Length: 448
Image (cartoon, rainbow, N blue to C red; front, side, top):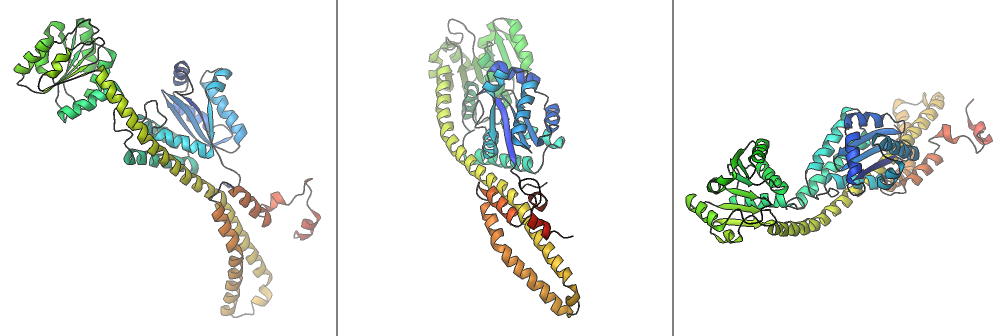
């Protein structure tokens, strides 16, 4: 493929910042089949390469187009039709990025700078899966391949050169981080889940994912305890056995909605005596509070309520915002590198064409001169050919150097067009005048 025409990289999509939840739900249901979507978009006549990314918070199509305006219209029509959207919804929610802005957006997505929770690691895996789908369907080429591998490099740099993902920015994750600080390792630790509040359930889920072992569920309604315990592969217990379960637990997560304390200072003191003063971590996510604050004054007991956890989250969010500034600088740096590489693609075919044209002229002139060149000794004939090539290479050196230098600038296309015109590298297309007729001078120069 010849790239002396401008390459069009376009990203169209909508995400949690531009589209309300109701529209994102519709998109997730309608556009969730990534395999089919890649094939459908790749089948559009304006599309050379495509990456299709669909998550619960975004639907984005990154494409290398052979014609920009018609290609963008085709991509907009695809999302309009496949997302069951109205034209008004599309206009309100859709964003379009071109060239370096498309690359920058992809890099920010892969580095989790554009996520609902900045620094979350899931999005990078989703981008990698989208790329695998693109490769599997033959929808990737030189541009998508380079762009995605560059995005992975950006994500790695952000992960290793900043601390954007090292601090918890949700209450449930903050509970996990605190537990790790208290116990060091969570393997084998027993969780006691008191009540069935959504946040406490989420905290228990994160604790289990981070290595905690057994989970016991206590609830006033035994049926709810059974249901939740089955979900966690844990053990349900009657509510009146709560004090007994405190003796066995290492981590207690409580959220019952009760009007008074369900875990008192006396209950905790009694449990500590029976458990030989092993550390006990109490997480009170209830409002009003479930656990008597006085329990936190007992030795070897660590009590955190919702406000404590939120303070940690707020502080960590400030830290993440500072780290995000470092990450944004990495994105800008890598966007510049990618743009420089992209610009070189504009000049390489022209450089090759210029050298090919020079070789063709030399070959033609030597062919015309065979009548006297044949009479030269082999050694002298080689000297003549070397001399001719040397003169031509010196003549081409400055134009080629200028082209390579211009490839680092956004104005490279003007240089490419000038060189191709001056050296008539597109002879078939350039040999016609304004009215589609060949110039009289060119007619005379054409071989018969």
